[in-house]
Image (tube, rainbow, N blue to C red; front, side):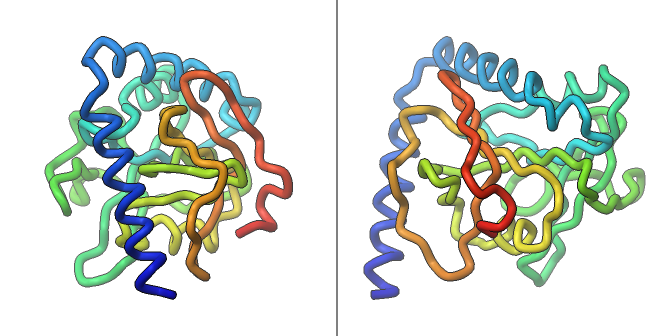
Length: 199
């Protein structure tokens, strides 16, 4: 059964990868802008003292607009750094995107020499990446486990950023998979019934 779940997850990842590759650059820019616009209207974003977000790669929903919006509002913004030899990550505060350097898996990460580590609280807004999410807030990531490990102990508000075409009614789940509190796509915001207890 475990192997069947892994195979199904890989099929969904490939579908979502193909979906994103086939978008035109104009479509992607428009969708990313709509997702950012919706995300910053959330009450939890407005009240957040700390905004944690992934730094997007080309096939992901762009987070650079979200980072800029949060910094312009004077919020503390932190992005993840993968800890070598582990499946853990730490969030470090950035003052601008110039604080980012190439890190693990080709992802831009905060410069540990310049960016202090931060701790999440109940007033933390966290943007979470995923190839796909389902309507109950469960996510399908890259299979490394970094975000599931982080979300298991996260006490703030987690938001999945995803394209509508990659949302599924249900996703195959493992026992360590965690869900988010809301989904934001270019078409809608969906709050997840139950929220935090589902983690």
